[in-house]
Figure 1 (tube, rainbow, N blue to C red):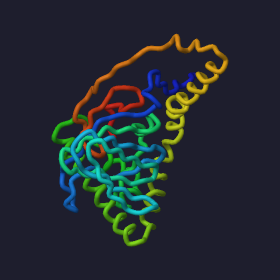
Figure 2: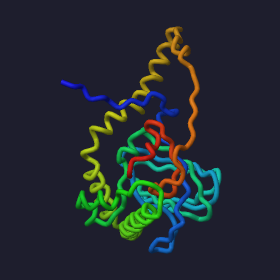
Figure 3: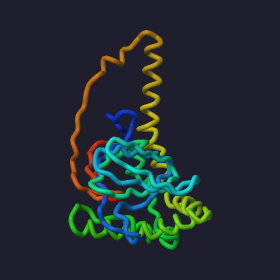
Figure 4: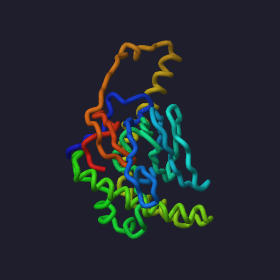
Amino acid sequence: MVNEAKPALPHPLPGAIGLSHLSAYDWEAADGVCGGSPHLHLVCTEAYVVTGGRGAVQTLSPDGYRDIPLEAGSIAWFTPGTVHRMVQGGDLRITVLMQNSGLPEAGDAVFTFPPEVLADPEQYAAAATLPPGTGPETAAAAQRRRDLAVEGYLALREALVAGDDGPYLEFQRAAARIVREKVPTWRDLWRAGALATAERTGAQLDALADGEPAYLGEATAYEAAPTRLGGFGMCGRRDEYNLPGTTLPYRSE
């Protein structure tokens, strides 16, 4: 029997995070707002570190609808299950930090498409997947994907603001159904990334407690630069790193 290779993240970023840089889309949506594709993550907390410009992130969660202002120096983060929509207010630029390196790139995100799309796995996959590259065809597909996500999002927001959380809760359940078959792969990635990083810290603490810090002999430094500029992400144009568990730049979303 041949043993399948397990995921390995030999040089994870601090805390086994994922990293990318975003410039929010400036396409105007049906409600007159410029910005990205609303979506949620199932098991990963996401953080926006604003490096320039201004805008907002709109969120839907059990505590209702929020519109959080973003400007240079501000940070916003949202836990699994929170629907979020990045809004462009003027040259908004953000560094995105993602929990659980590798999981977001392995499908830990579901768009707020209308219910009939969410109910059909093939239709959902077709709407969510972009052509490769960064040319006009990909840009047009990314805008169609954004518009479809906004269509579903506006219905969720309207109901939530009116005090009806039923559609929002049903969207969460639909999202869980869509990703369920990916969980075994996610578990392997989690073990190789975030869990392995935490366990490594535990082993280092044990070594320090024993007065035997031999692991410090493995100290070194790494460097990296973006390997693709202007890719089409969920929220905007994305600068990506070819680092395991970071943004895995050339796979389709």
